[in-house]
Length: 137
Image 1 (cartoon, rainbow, N blue to C red):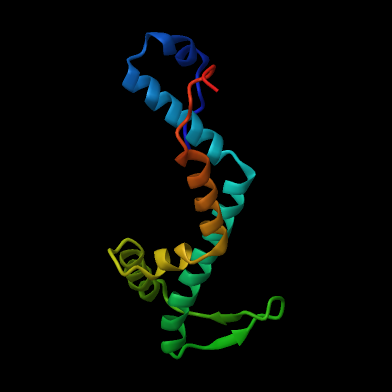
Image 2: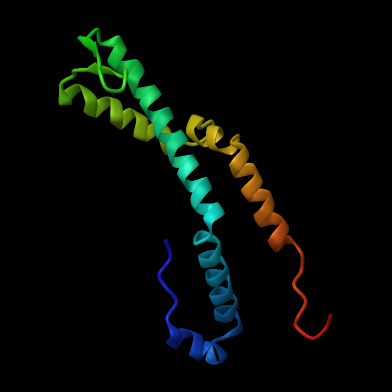
């Protein structure tokens, strides 16, 4: 999600302004967090929940159309046939719902997930305490 650190930038850190040094530190900490296994797990669960929600929302329109539904022998998932011209407006409506302001069903569902709450609490705890400069402890 973030570009990789370049060693040149790290070597030039002493010549950067204080604001740039703070930004570099923030980017480095964010990069470390994004590369963590916990973040990858939470991201996977959020994507899975969002895709499931999208399928549920879109499925309402498919079943309402009264199209032929047949059970898929492999997965037990109903197969619905629908012309692409009818799918595009449904997906367009979902995009507007996903990107809308409050109340947003997609965001609310993600915020209620336990793994998201736990991860947010861990991040808050790790970064909420003032960091003492080395040598003062």
